[in-house]
Length: 213
Image 1 (tube, one colour):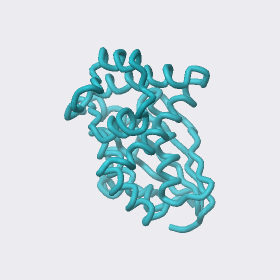
Image 2 (cartoon, rainbow, N blue to C red):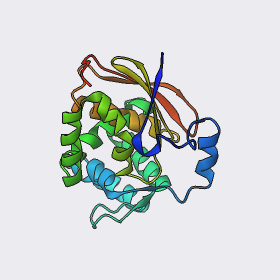
Image 3 (cartoon, rainbow, N blue to C red):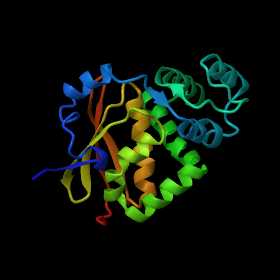
Image 4 (tube, helix red, strand yellow):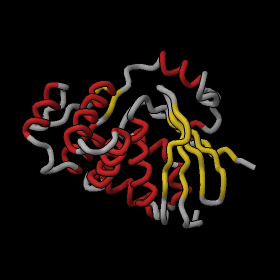
């Protein structure tokens, strides 16, 4: 039998129980969706250090991300998507778009672990293990933006379905993020597959071989 595993801050809330309807409706009334410096630093300052060409840097600057100046307190989600789109095409031109975005998600976590917040968060996840890491996913994602909502459903001893309200191609970026996080939490042979999606949300199948909780 499937057992729902809701992220702690929303365990009793009914606002996100229907990702196809209620969740989407809620997004229309949400304040501007923002991305915060930890994820920007993790990808562009740390994860891609030495790989951002002058041309790409100028393109990013035209979208509002100036890597030669201190990071802003927040960036709009739309600007973030445009910056990741440019970067995926520039650094992985031979890869399909979904693969390029996933690779950048993994790279972001590699860089994020070098930030003060990233070291603390990923260090805790390694102690928690994959299952408890998933239960803390809401908190983890909210250190990088103001909009992510998470719904987790257990489908086996080492398997779960994870629903996120991630729009568009960001589904593949978050696929890479979750894959790298599962590995960081000690998940052996971890995999994250996109099971279903629309333009507003995505459902993943997350699995690993290690049965530790």
